[in-house]
Image (cartoon, rainbow, N blue to C red; front, side, top):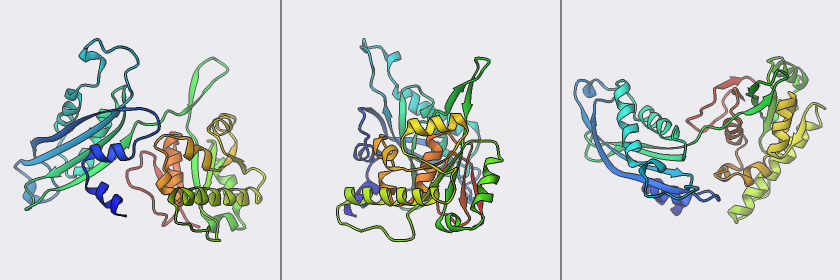
Length: 306
C-alpha cells in the first residue's frame, strides 16, 4: 500500500518507470512547464488567465537505426510543448481532464510515441496545486481482413461483459441472438464465479488465481450455449473475429503476455473487458447497468439491464 501511495504522488517519470513494460522503451520528459491559459468551469475562472503547470513523460519505441545526431530521427521535446499549445489553442476548456486527454492524444499521434503520462495542475486556485494526471497508450489497431475484391477491411467486434446473473438467466440464448443480430463479431467476457477464489498473500500468485477463476467462469458460460467457444490466445480471437464467430474470452494468456497488461485488475472482470475492447478497437462495449468501469475509455459504453 505504501508503494501505491508513493507512486500516486510521484512524478510521472517515476510512475512510468515503475509500470514499465517488458519490451524496451526510451522515455522523454518535460518537467514543470508553465503556461498561462483561460480554463475552468466556474464563473470566477472566466475572463482571465491562470497559471498551469505541465509534467509530461512519453515512452517511445527505441530508434532502430543510427541517430546520426539528427533531430528529425527523434521525438523532439518541441513536439510535446507544441501538443500543449495546440490543445489550448483550439477552444476554451472547462476541465483539466479534457485538456490532459487532448494533449495525450496529440502526443500519441507521433509515430514513435507508445504511452503518455500527462499531469496538469492549476496554481492559482488555492494555496496548493490542484490537478489531474492521466496515462494513455497508443490506440489499438483493429483486426483486418482482405475481402474477395482485394480491399482491406477493418473489423470492429462488439465486446460484452456478462455478470453471473446474466450467465444463469433463462433468456441467455435470446440475449445472444440479439447480440449477433447487430451484425458484428461478438466477444463475451465474464468476471469471477459466484464462489470466491482462494486468497493468498503473494500478489503475483493471487493475480494468477484470479485470472484462472475468471477462466473457470468462462467455461461455465460455454456449457450453457454451444456458440460460446472459449478462446485464450490473440491468434484465436483474431481468427474468430474474421470468421464472425461468437466467443468467450479466457484472459490469462493475453493479459500475461501483453506488455502493460492490466495485471493490477486481474480480479476485475469488467475492467478486463474494457481493456480488451480497447485492445481490439471494438465498436462498443456492453455492460450490465451499474457496472463500475475505469474512467477514460476510448470505446463507447452501452449499459443494459440484467
